[in-house]
Length: 273
Image 1 (cartoon, one colour):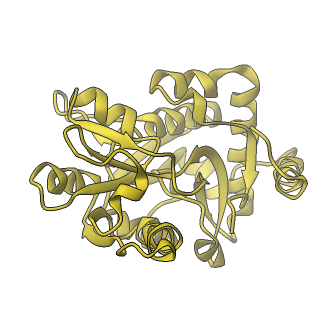
Image 2 (spheres, one colour; image 1 turned 45 degrees about the vertical axis):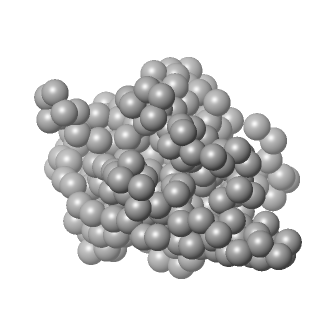
């Protein structure tokens, strides 16, 4: 994956500072990490219906990082909209839960970016929509607490309204499961989720969904840290860099069919503005 000089420089700066990183004393003493996830975003994190266990790419990655640090994870769950408050109120030590690095979120937090992502249109397999432009004027659902509503609005202005077509109609959902249910119940015409989730959804419900067009924006998912938790941020960055170097990071992504979403190195606050 290519990156600009500025972005690569930020990544290298983060790694340089991680060279002598050590765990914060309180975490080292307790031997635990407190991590909170929203378990409705398969394959990043979800409850296995057969075992009720937490599973997913983020779960595997966090467990691998914790093992390298000699720590045990204490997991908790919350709604997506409560992930950032759980970090700021110190109920979670950091957030790794399908959360996108966004400029507005960097006012109070830092992101160590580890996965390429982008909002992607999809429809039911029997939809008449063949091109993204066919969705102009249609009802498009997505999770309300993500960046996707703004991305849909931006796309609609650029593609639909600029060419004289009716604007897309955004319909809010509580989470990705709710949005897919709205689509299956014909309450919306199309939906938007992160591109990393759709191969899994298509595999779970074979023949149900069809991707339309390319992702309408580009970004990264990141591990989110409080700005004053530099030591924890840097030691996690150091271990993630080691996992990329030894191939264990890529192996986890490949397990979930997302090897193509890999980054070459951890990057600090690197997503486009």
